Length: 250
Image (cartoon, rainbow, N blue to C red):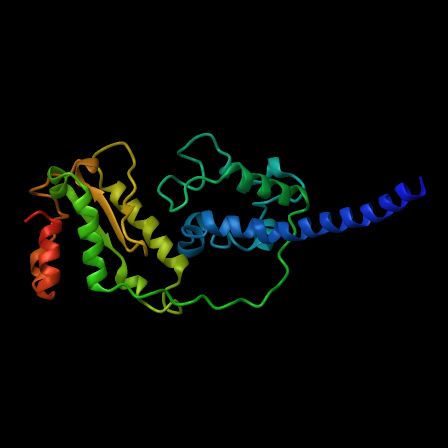
């Protein structure tokens, strides 16, 4: 009996300590989730007037989050919205689907009082690896080679390497994600079809976004998206020009 009491005496402080640690981690976890799913539009462009989406204190201050009342908190309501036209994040976002586990963390954070994160010294974001013209053409070649030959003439691309290659002090990763989201918005606003499409990143750095003009009902011969690839490719080394022509089947 005495041994059992001793074990219980040891267990309860340990359990309390673990619970305290988990609660302390909730603000950081909630902030990470909101940054991942929401910052690319709201923080970078101020969309919807919520440019403070990663600032937990301001979310509470401006009544977007009601401490202890997850059901009354606008942020969680929008993330759980059943209507796809009102749900956040939108389908064109880089990360359009919040997982159940992540939603549970946001809910738990709110119910636990929606505490703010402990102030930390911000670590500098490392510079991104530079994307060369050769790497870009190789990615195009690889992507197009996998497609049926009849589909290749309908492929179009947006390239963001000119932004990705900037130092992060001039153009952050959050701003780059915002440009990807904005590219989707522009493309869908010019589409003649009702279904939303997402340009597909085809390279590791996600600087080349591909789409098929048939998905937006654009005409292949009169589309404003026609780009004179050959004028551009004429400035590339001969070996890379050969790869480029192979990629387009010409």
